[in-house]
Image (cartoon, rainbow, N blue to C red; front, top):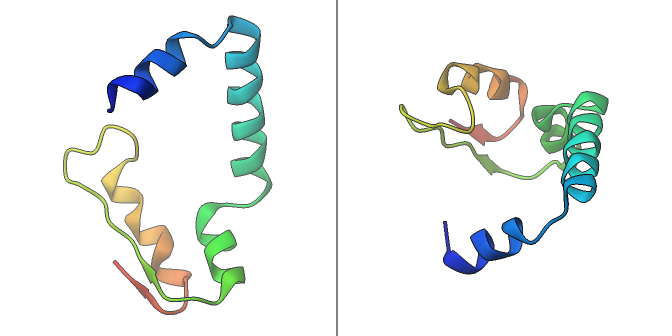
Length: 71
């Protein structure tokens, strides 16, 4: 993670941080990422690392429903 991004993240106040988390959760809950990608109708390359700490690599199968997706 770039140092400037860390610095910016540390400068975010608690209320702003909580708002970002809440809205991000609402965004993902409204429609999943695979659903959003399907609606775009463009080729997609999905990459998950075996040791990915952000996303569970076993969830890659959710992208099987996305047309023109390469996993």
